[in-house]
Amino acid sequence: MGGGAGSGEGGLAGAVERKGGRAVVVDIPAPWGNADRMITTLLHVAAGGAIGAALRYLVNVGAGRMVGPGFPVGTVIVNVLGSFAMGVLVTVLARKGGNHLAPFLMTGVLGGFTTFSAFSLDALTLWERGQGGAAAIYVLGSVLLSLAGIGAGLFLARSLT
Image (tube, rainbow, N blue to C red; front, side):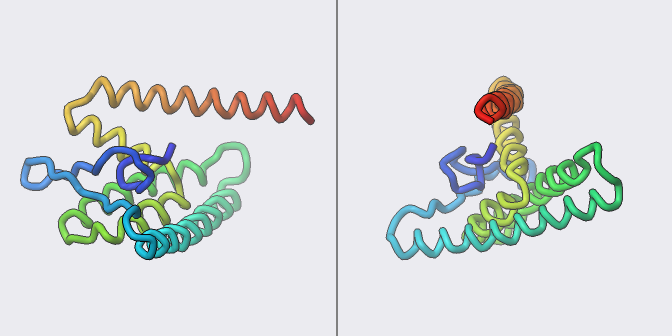
């Protein structure tokens, strides 16, 4: 469900952050432009992704050991923490002029930790822009299409093996 605001993957143009009661668009810099900047940005995203993926693994292992198998507690934890962290980062980066860190932190670390954070930000951004209907369609459509996708993948893999 990536590809959203702050993900640097061509989703929404920017995230909305509330500042003094008014909406402020956080302009997330695109990695396109000169080749050196793009390569540097890609390396930042890759490093952040490695960190996020390792953290997700550790949370899942820890939660599994504490709670046991049966319910994906670790996944719930990373999704909620990732969404919370995305909200914090959108605000802090907008207020402190740290948008240049967005590819590393938002796309990389949080993308590796969980893509649910970008999904949550996209939905909230649509809502805050006054596009409640679009937000509802996005949320419902994303969940249903993702479930259909995994169902289709399971069906295909099971039928071939």
